[in-house]
Image (tube, rainbow, N blue to C red):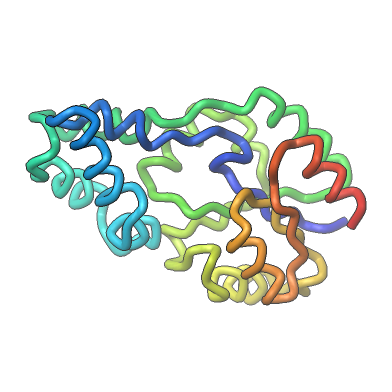
Length: 196
């Protein structure tokens, strides 16, 4: 029985950071684009995902940005967490996968997002283990993320399969000897997993 390292974003849930950016922008769409570049796809966000920045510090930085409309930290936190929508086929697909595989969640995420996801996406609570970037300090595009999994688990790379929507993460896993399925949809992912 292999261990599936299962991604969250765009696998179990759809993710739309623009919802957050539009909600908090002081200057409409232009401001939303600025906020997106600064806080959703930046080195600063990578540091947050690696656990190098505390949630309150991250939110206070966004609150102090001139592009952010006046909001309480609580309102910002709620907006930050309200960017996910469940993939309807995910719960049944994960249950099917668990008939022949152990499932561990492996995600590049921050503590605010993971808390919201754990509270609102019940299928996440069925995983046996969690490998989260903010706890381990590595993103999945870095070999250290997979070396950490192998070192801490004491298992061989051949026992693992990564399912992830990002090709760079899949390539990194494969460079560490871990098989990968580049997720496009659940039907394709389950078929490719079965074919491995």
